[in-house]
Image 1 (cartoon, rainbow, N blue to C red):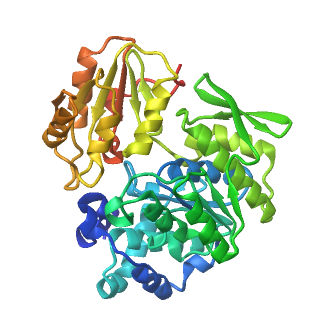
Image 2 (cartoon, rainbow, N blue to C red):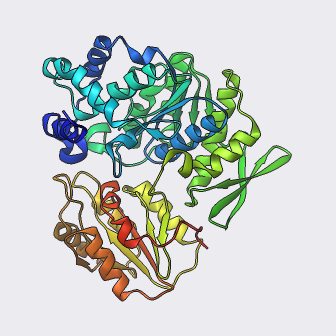
Length: 439
C-alpha cells in the first residue's frame, strides 16, 4: 500500500473517536496490552513522561519536549488528535514520523489488526511506542487521549506523571462530577513515580492525595516553588516573570495565550523532577526550549494569530475551562468588537460553554466536516436559548469570510470551540502574518 492507501485503510477499518465519538471508545486497555505484547513490548524499551489533564496537557507536552530537545536528548512526542497531518501525532525532536514508517508498521500489524480489532487510537499508540523503541529515543513525552486510568497510553510506567488540571469534559466517559473525572485522570499515578499536579483544586486534590499515598508516589503542586509575578507581550513572545524564592527569571514563550502562565509553572516543576531523575537540563536549555516550542514541535492553535487588521486568532479551546481561559485573555488585551466563529462537537457540553460567552459579541456558527460535529443550525438554536443570536455558515472559512466582511481593522476574530474546526481553517487563504503577541 502507498501512504495514502494506508491512511485510508486505517480511517475506514478502525473505529476513530475523533470522527464518530462514543462508538470508538474502548473502556479498557486490553487491546493495547495485546498489541504491545505482540510487538515485543516497545513501551518497556524507552523512558517516558506521562501527561494527563482536562486542559493544558498539549501545551505542557510540547513545552517539555522542546526543552528536552534543547538539552540534547533524543525526544519522542506522542500527542492527539492531529490538526492537518496524521504524522503530527508521532514526532522525534520535532520531526514527524516518516510516511514509510507508517506504511511499514501498518503492514506489519495487519495480522494483529485482524485478530485484536483495535480502535484507531489504540493502533496509533502502539505505532508510536514501536517507533520510539526502534529509533532508540532517550525519552518520550506521552500525552493521554482522554481520561487516564483506561487510556490506551496507560500501559507505560513513566519517570514522571503530570496532571495539568481537572475540568468539565468527556463526562459521558469520565463521570458526572469533578471528583469522578479526577479519579480517572489519577489513574496515571504509578507506584513510587513522582507526580506533578498543575493546579490544586478543591474537588480533585483529595483524590490525587489518596491515589498518590496508595502508590507511595511523591506528589508536587506546580507553583509551590515558583509563582507568576507578571507577564507582558513583546515582539511576538509572551514574557513571563517567574519568582522562585528570592530570585526572579524572565521566560519568553512563543505560545501567546495567558493560560500559558499556569502551564509554565507546571513545566518548571516537571523539569525539577526530571533533574532529580538524572536528566541534566541547563537553564539555557529551558529558556531556549520555551522560546522555540512552536518551532521545535510544530504546535499550532494555541492563541495563534494568523493575520492582522482585523486580528484573526485560532484557539482549540473546546470546553468550559478552555473557553474561560480565552475569556481571561480577552480581559488583558485591547480591541474594538469581538467576532466569535464557533463550532463544537455533539458530545461536548455546548450549553455550558454558550452560557460563558459575551452576548455583545458577533457570532458566526459553523461546523467541522465529520460525523461527530454538531450542525451549525443546532448550535445556533442552543445559543438562541441563551439569548445569543448569530449567523450560520456551511464551513469555517465561509464564517471567517463573513466576519472579515463586517469587521473593522481594530476588531478581533476568534475561531474556537473545536480542534477539528481549527483544523479546517484554510491557512493559505487567511494567514498573512506570523504571531506577534496579543497587545
